[in-house]
Image 1 (cartoon, rainbow, N blue to C red):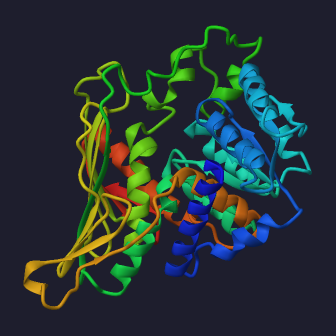
Image 2: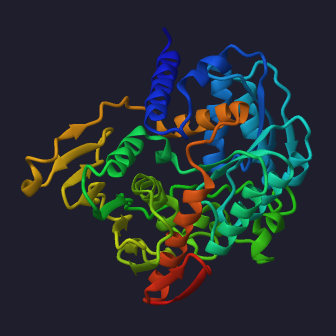
Length: 422
């Protein structure tokens, strides 16, 4: 058995574990059903540059290795060399599948033979392309963060809610079964009332976070790059290769480590807690080492929810020691640091609460999320990472970003969607 086939079987086994824990999860049998179908899913990738090239490699790899009946049939990027490199990669894996290239993403959305679209563009394009794709009748895999702001998040959510399209938000750890196991533990009252939780995403990048994206000197606006289209919703501005290649470092185009890194940890934790919209958010943001980066290189977030539960979140690009993922209740604590959800009783409740540890397969969460999206395109079952929790997450991301910049805490009213200083 090939290593790719073994990995696929481990992935589908994880889907089965998730399905057993949640009625909205993907049925494990669905993978077996679709693998025997002659009907193929046809997708396009918008933004096959950095993260987008990873999507091109994975989806065309699914085709090559027989993981899923999918054809990558279209690419769109403002940079022509990015499209050409991505096409070459896909051509080598897809046995002659014809791939259309469009510098304007709207022409890709016009293609009738495209079922689903991957939106791997920078954050300032997530909203408009997401809405355009939904209105074009395409299913969407939209990279995280969901959008750049709260207001944009609700706009995309409204478009999705008014449609019949599948929208998978690329929050990779939403595919991990341990969070579904934790959700069941919480719902069953096994830890008593959830009091507070903690998580984080920290790494140490001595050369400066996101500076590992090289400057491509062969890209020339007006020659092989549509810089005006790239700026898009942010309006015209002078060509700046640093902003183009390392946009996550700049506050006009990204929320930095909050939206790029911390959403991977916060969103599934909120899912496990079945959280409502947060009502109060504060963030202490600092520039400690990487003084050239506009966005903060260190953040500490507190997010409070209507039931009083508080989530504590750490983000750092200069020290990789983070908080252990856990949910603390009165009667027990759920540890989520490894591949499993582990329940340990609090000492005063040791005779009442049993220790418990899920036994789950260790899977590649990002490929799991991609495969889940493809399956849901065919089955129309609910997907793993839906817009509901992505929209709730944007309240934390946006308000934490505002707080980091101005030092104030912010309150959010879920009923009126009004934001105020807290």
